[in-house]
Structures are given as C-alpha cells and as structure tokens.
Amino acid sequence: MFTFLSYGQLDSVANSLSDSLFLNDLELDSLGTVNKKNVSSGSLSVYQDSYYQAVEEIQKKINKENCPKLIRGFRVQVFSCSGPNCKDKADKYYNQFIMAYPDLSVYKMWQPPSLKVRAGNCRNRFEAEGIKKFIEADFPFVFIVPDFIETDLMLDCDKMLLSKEEIK
Image (cartoon, rainbow, N blue to C red; front, side, top):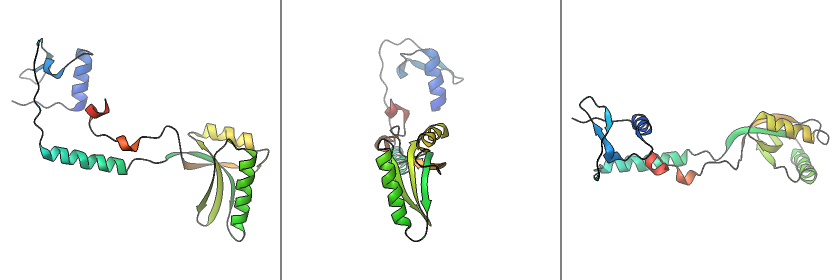
C-alpha cells in the first residue's frame, strides 16, 4: 500500500512532530496517519524518474522567463507632452529635475503619443505623496501615477526554484 503526502501535509506533520525531524523517523499506519518512530539509524533511497527531472527543468525555465524585472508601484509625473518641440521640452524638464533633485531617480519615457518625465520608485501611494509634496514648490503641476518601478527588493531571477528542498 502506498500513501502520498502533499507538501502541505508533510509540512504540517513535520511541524507538529519536531523541529529536528528526519524522514526516516516517520512511519505510516494502515490509515495513512504519519507517526514518529524511534530508529537509531536508517537510510532512504530515492528513485526518481528522468521524466520528472525533465519536467522540473522545464518549469524552472518557465519561472525564470516569467520572473518580474519590475514591480507595480507609483511615480510622480513631472511633465507630459506631445507634438512639435516635445522632445526639447521634455529634455528641459528632465535636466531641471536632475539639477534640483539629484538624489531622486528620474525617468524620461515615451508612451505614444506622449513623452513623459516621471520621478521616484515608490512601493505605495504614501511614498509618492511624500515626493510630490517635496517637489511641488519647483514643479507645481505634478501628480501621482501608477507605474512599473525598479526596487532593491527585486527577486533574483537566476535562482527561481521549483522544489521546497532547493529553497532551503
């Protein structure tokens, strides 16, 4: 008779039994209940199908491709325009902002049909409000916009793993 445990079941069993629990300390009864047994020594042999390894590698590649490079957040829009001389105007605002606030990140972006100058990498609207109040004296017509932002708390996409054992 074989009994299969999901990750959640195995985690709850491991947490309820002991912090220093080894797989060879577990025993299954006929009802599939996991019990702790007292064994002085033992071994565990794992026979894994090559198909499982291939599927795991494919899943890792999918995870890495879908890893977010940016996260959702907010920025303060300093300037937006479209039409003739728009690039020159955007460059002017961009350079003025860099000179006035060298510690704040500023971005010039093209979102058709407009060229926009935005500042900050805010994880929430509250942070963006702080930047808005800080720069309003020099740039009175600013407003907060949702955007994809860069952050120091980004995921390491090279280490996207599938199994819980590899994460630990």
